[in-house]
Image (cartoon, rainbow, N blue to C red; front, side, top):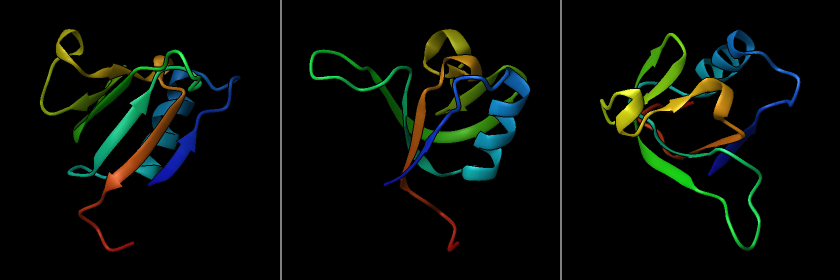
Amino acid sequence: MTDLTIPSDADTDRIKALVQDHLEIGDTVAVRSEERTEDHGTDVVGDVTGFEPGYLEIDGQSLDAGSVRYDEIHTVGTIESDSHR
């Protein structure tokens, strides 16, 4: 898995640009909203289906149903990629 850790001082536009540079539509990813620790750290796992204004669309879901706001992403990692980079 290739991880991208978002700089703590990045604003939403910068985070979206970083995520778009790192991922492609169809990539299977794990998104962490906070630094992983032994006792907590929730991952959202699924396929990237869109780079929406304000959030990363996962599995075609709305923001309320499983997608992740850019400003809540701490780390995003590619589990499987459709591209041959």
